[in-house]
Length: 330
Image 1: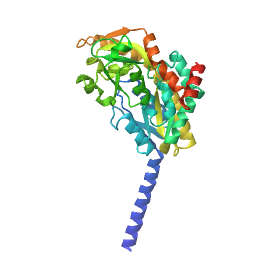
Image 2 (image 1 turned 90 degrees about the horizontal axis):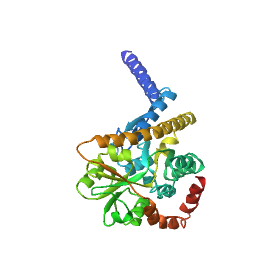
Image 3 (image 1 turned 45 degrees about the horizontal axis):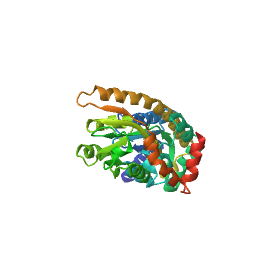
Image 4 (image 1 turned 30 degrees about the vertical axis):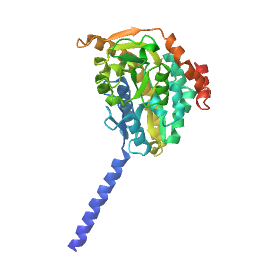
């Protein structure tokens, strides 16, 4: 009789535990990994998204962020999304082109007339099409984040014209389009992961790199390459990506929460970006340990050097139509 009561008691405890586990599972936590540090304006945008998701879902859905490459490089995070080991990430569209070729069009040099024109394209029909195309690679785009314009920075003086890149090893993202760009300008493209770049610049593995102002500052690359040239060769956006393994198991309500949070966070991040650019300049100029110099240059020689890339892109059955649509949409 005692044994019977014991088994009944244990059964009740087990039932409660199972019910408790079921209750915990209702509160989903989506892990988001990215390579930028916590001072970067893109990270601020992702934090804003996490706050909005938690608020509008009343805590039923949350996002836990792992910054600074804790979970791997951009390519590695995308691979984790594909197998469902990671829910979300933020990557440059230059990295996405390895997984979905259509994204390569956004790495074309001097593609957009200005910042506002880029947002019209990215938030419009063309941008929405691109966000959906990654699904064939088990990667679904949620939103395009502002990543400013990319410019060259070097150790030994400004890049006044493409000839100043001749013979120089220039760090690029692992992107065929980025490699083609540096080749067109006469440099030697050298793919290196973001987390390894500071040491590579410091030790002379590469002579130069290219990126936007906030990244140049928050990475502290300005300390070893203090010459920043405003040639604005590309405006490659970042993209917020969720793996279809995660997306497909969300309810329609949860998907709605995610879309709304991404929209709010994107607008917040784009506003924050302009502030971050100015803050970066002020902070670098205030750093007495190094004299950072900024240079305005004529973009015409750079545009002329990369014009063959447009001729080649228009021969591509994927790139050509997209390129012409983007130009017409501005």
